[in-house]
Image 1 (cartoon, rainbow, N blue to C red):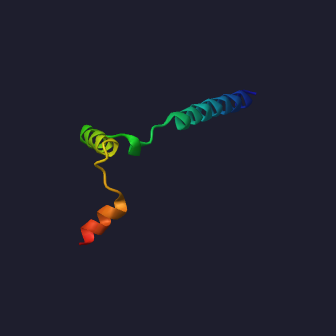
Image 2: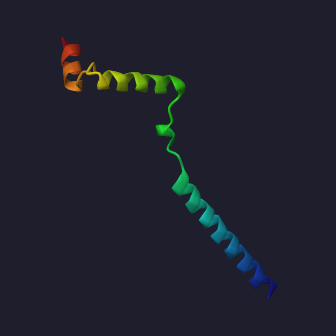
Image 3: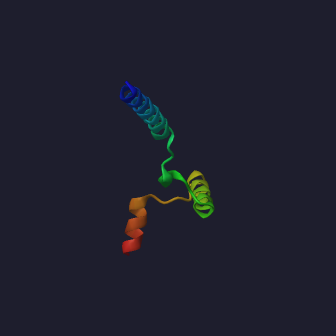
Length: 67
């Protein structure tokens, strides 16, 4: 009888752990989406350039680079 209670306790604990893991997976942050301050500043600068029309399309940039 005691072994059955221990098994039930183990199963209950495993279910709780599974729920915790599911929650963690659903709320994890992708580390590749986190920018350091330098990267964030560069992104803001790039967005400003894009909005003001100073950005160059990639194919034009690559053509100029080959010249």
